[in-house]
Image (cartoon, rainbow over all chains, first blue to last red; front, side, top):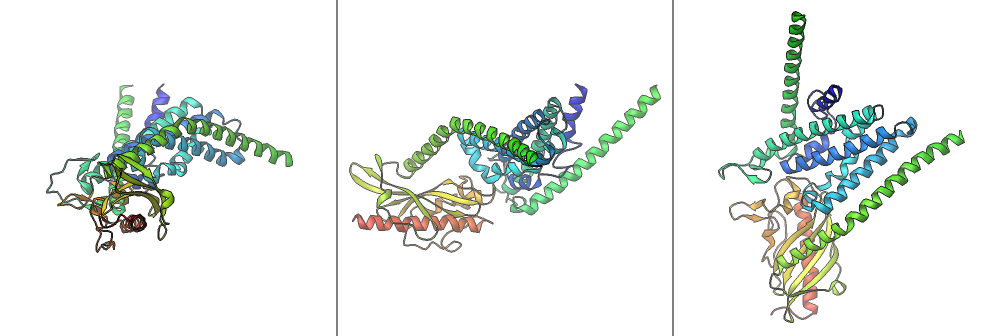
Length: 212
Length: 200
């Protein structure tokens, strides 16, 4: 249980796909102009990641390594299309506002990377923990970046006006340069946080040794 | 060697077949709902353009082809107790992130009643603001991008950044939507002329 918790935690800070592994950035920058898109994209991507990791892990013994990449793409593309249909059927508004980025989950490096580096080698339970952690790590970063960009670039939060009318939206934050800037700030914050957590951990270890 | 190729091919085919069968089931389960959503959206848009209309008649077959790269999908005549109120034209054309589908309503007085964007793929926060009811090209008057076409005469200018306000940082999308609107109303005008309804 402790091992699964550790795996789950990895994706949130230590190996955050966006802030530490730095993969899947393209669509992350593109959808983070408003919070509802961030949540939608995060959940859609977590669903595809979870299902793909489960299927790949389940069949990893019968997938020959020479044709594993095409098989990964078939599996990922199938689940992406499924979530695309489901969103069109049951969340038409969200599906409309996500634009082209749902179909683009197919080529999201995070899924390809996790399937190749993790699911192809590990058991199914580990994969569930890993994909949920990675998915949550992806989602929180998207929502946090989107919150900053939407608030400064549009004066709203999840579509609701929160800034006073006198506030002149800074369009810079909606455009890609602003996206890069906010994103870079988040990366440095995460590195600082990781450093602090390492120090605390080290201090705890020393304390433990002293006690012993 | 041959046997190895065959084995790999068969494994790949097996995964592809399984994925297709799975997709077929999901498609079957969702396609009715998706079609119903689109119908509902179209009906709501038609009702929104012509709230007084009692019925809509499909007149797609009588329409002339659209100019430029825009393609006509369907056209409806809005009627009320036998009288024609106007024409609603559903057309699509190329835009920034792929084809955009637009519904244009025009009255028999050659004025645009309204413009609705039915489908568009674009960047959230930029081009997608074309269909955002909370995004205003004229902030003070709260006029949306599509809202600015309302009650525009079709003989007026349709040049983006002169006669039509563009969406900030999305000139391509603004021009694309405007081109579809212009092509639609031109075709609509010729229908109105041929059916001798103009000028009343």
